[in-house]
Image (tube, rainbow, N blue to C red; front, top):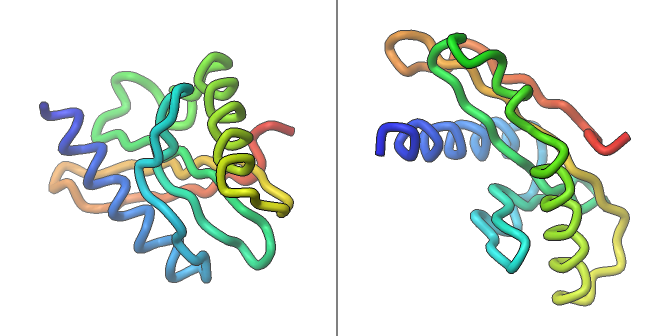
Length: 118
């Protein structure tokens, strides 16, 4: 339950961060047979599938290190499924938003890692 609360907080912080950066949010928590994509947005003409990882301690390492090859493969399949299902003809990529929170559960650092499949 605690992890879900931290995850939801991280996703909302990421949405706010992305909107300020000019990203148009298209969908949140998109689910299909491959899993879930936290945020889908448009960065100019590119469709971006965002995975958000949030940590409030460094006991388990940096948030972005939680993206395993298996998770990345599922995200790629989810992205392709979304594009086909909604008949999109856009360039696309997968980005990671890594959020570290301080002890007061306030943002201490947000890192945007673009195009993690390259």
